[in-house]
Structure formats: C-alpha cells, structure tokens
Image (tube, helix red, strand yellow):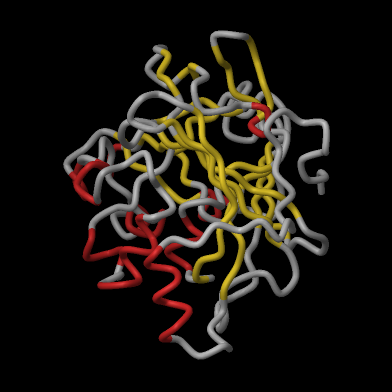
Length: 263
C-alpha cells in the first residue's frame, strides 16, 4: 500500500496530532456516552462561505455512515485540475477539478481518514479496498492501476438501470465489480489513507479515467442518523449549512445484484 501524506505535503496534517477540535455536538456526545464508544480521527479541509481555506482534525464517532463519507479515493489516485494532473492527496479546496461532463468545478471540501487493522467501526467488518487493474473496465479504464476505498462508487451505464431506477446511469459500489482477476479486493495490513472530495452537490469526478462519485450523504432515511449523531455528522461538513444543502442526487445508487436480477 502507498504511504500516507508526507510531512512536506502542503497543508498536510498529522492525523495523530493531539491538536483536535471538538464541536459542541461532539462535546455533548463525549459527556453522555460511555468511554468505550468507538471513535476515530477525521481530517477536514474546506472553503468557508467567504471562500477562505480552513482545516482541522477532529474526533467523532467511528460509525459506518461517518466513515463512508471519507473512504473513497486511495492514495496516489490521479485527477485532472486546471493546473494539470495531480494526486488526490495534493488537491486542496479551491482547486478546480475536472468532472465527468468535461467541465471544471471548484473543490469545496476534502476529507481524509486512515484505515487499517482495528481502525474500523466497532462490530463492523474489516474495511476492504478495491484494486482495479489497468484497462480492466475498457481501454484506459482505468489508465493505470487504481486503488479505491471501501465506499467508492463507479458510474455505471447499462440498459437495466432505467428499468430499475429510471435513469441511464447509476453509481455502483466498486466492490461489486470484484472478479478476483482484474478487479481485486484488498485487506489493509498497514495504515492507509483514503480521501473524498466534496463539491456544491453530488458530482462525478474522473479518477485514473474512471468516473467516481463524490460526497453526498444520500437520503436522510438511508443515512440513519438522528439527534446528536446527525449534528455531529454534519459538523464534519462545515461548507454546508445543513443536510438540505447537499441537494438532490444527480444519479441514483444501485447494487450490481439489482441489475443481475433482471437477467
């Protein structure tokens, strides 16, 4: 696996730093929960309402819904910006990133967590990365081997999608493409960094030639968070004014088995 951010990376934060910011919701959570509640560190970079760059580390619940919002892009994955091709760990809020529609949009938020043995939420399965080898899904798809996090979803086009979701394309978990040959499931044995990008809404960013879903919590019902847990979750996305500010999803989410049921 590739190493985490190095100390000379611009704006890089040591995820093991003791300088941790607690939001009011998180302080209340700490007071009311038992000490054995699973927690983890999250790194957040964002642009505020005035377009100013901010960054912080914070402690929040090691809950699958929280981790899913961060664990998408593997270290050294490549995206195109208006300043050229860059690794995801070098892209910062304020950079203009190329989307699947060919346009560029300003990155508003970047999240990062570290995965590895015993870092996932309590009582959940060990997080698995997905390695997609060069040309596995077609010519230059991806252009070179790509490692994605456990929550990565690829934009997939198939005739059955319209029958299921009324759309020409849907986001399918990268893990659903695992075939044991060209697309492999990998278990981290050492700590690895994973990232996610956030724009004004749900977008599709081109990563190593593949179209990958960006930050969106999905529906409030499917997110399954209420009260303090929801407030704590939203505190990780200070570029948003509230849940509704994420907007509607541009493409639905499906599982590959949904399409296989159609034959």
